[in-house]
Length: 117
Image (cartoon, rainbow, N blue to C red; front, side, top):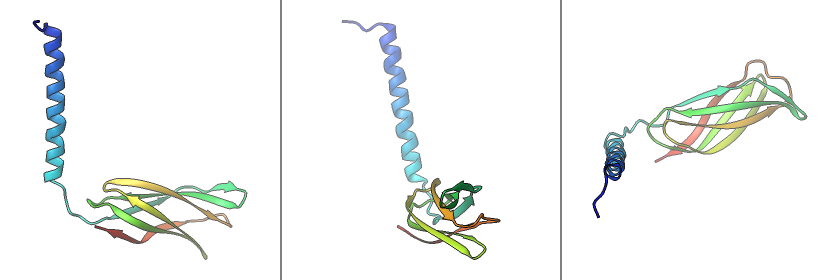
């Protein structure tokens, strides 16, 4: 049985897409950088909750290596809050939440430790 033009078009499109994705993945694998994790921490605005004030914390890994067991600390005046994020992949972000008993004025977040391979 002879294939019609539509079947050939679908075959060609599928082949082009498959080869393009394969080529892109090979390119990424060969050109992967080795820059260690570099973090950017942003703290959101406080939201009133029953226990105090809750803040969202975003941790962005700008490096080329996945960070594990990322220790994050948020400080506001004399109060500190800490939490841990299991994984922050390369060029990705993860989020967590902290709660303060008093309304935060200018909270600052930082990464205090992590492991990487």
